[in-house]
Image (cartoon, rainbow, N blue to C red; front, side, top):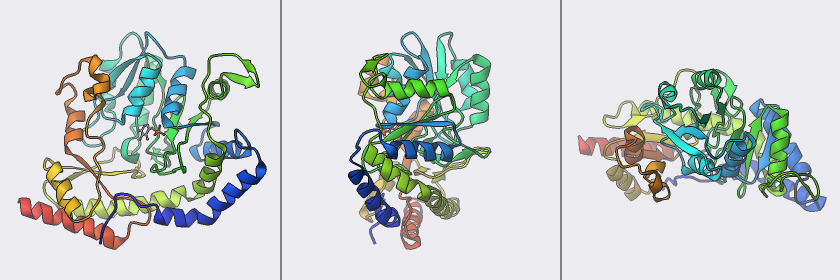
Length: 370
Ligand SMILES: *Cc1c(COP(=O)(O)O)cnc(C)c1O
């Protein structure tokens, strides 16, 4: 039985009627940009995130970019960011011409190591961008404490962790402005590109509403050089229809992760994610680590089990960042994640038989190698 890396079948079935209704409602409203659906979704997603405000934007990268801009971080400033993240987090910093300060993750969690942050702070450092990678909440108490002690802003990258918590508080509600992505494959996915910023500061919200819409609050009155980075009315309607399902989808991901964890703990040579104290994980991805990663991926591929690597090349070794002058070895923990990580299939609708197929294949691989 083939096990695709990702399959929307069950999630789509759960929302089929509601998605069609959402389309009809927008279609018939005859209002296709910044209408009722965007407002409704912003309000419900802010409530979900336990923040005062949500500003819908065009994608996750713009959410991070506009957050940095609204916080007036730019040329001459520096920003702390994990050395292992999807490149979008770094790109947002580049967009505002600020300097990137990569800080290594913990080996066990893959998330920013708070113990390394203080030593990386420079006189011009203005912000920390923690990334809740794989769906696991970063150690936000420690991060916020350091930020507050040094007067730094915090911009969470919550693209992978909608619904995760740290000490009971939702990710995307700790920082000064926090970006998330509703790219179709994310835990809460649109039917195209979409993103949002969650925050508590009302002045900052006003700034972001203007920045996303040509720098304008009032039509044809432009106060600043803004962008067209609006959340699409149709996507907002689709997201509003899907949001009530997010928590039960996350629970299903967690149940699958529990079965994977128990089986993988009994397999030599394959490591799984170790959650930090106080962090929950909504398993956007289920990463494992093994020195024989490429062989394992081929082995699973031959059995029609889909996997992906998150991410094969860390940002500091990408051609786009060659000008920063980092060599291999500059960030060894990020590099080990890049060379040893493999993501297994995990999504609502992945059957127990399919999970067993994955686990049996892992056991077979380990035994063949032993
Ligand atoms: C998906 C993702 C983004 C970017 O989101 P887009 O909507 O694709 O722009 C940023 N950061 C992380 C960690 C992501 O996984």
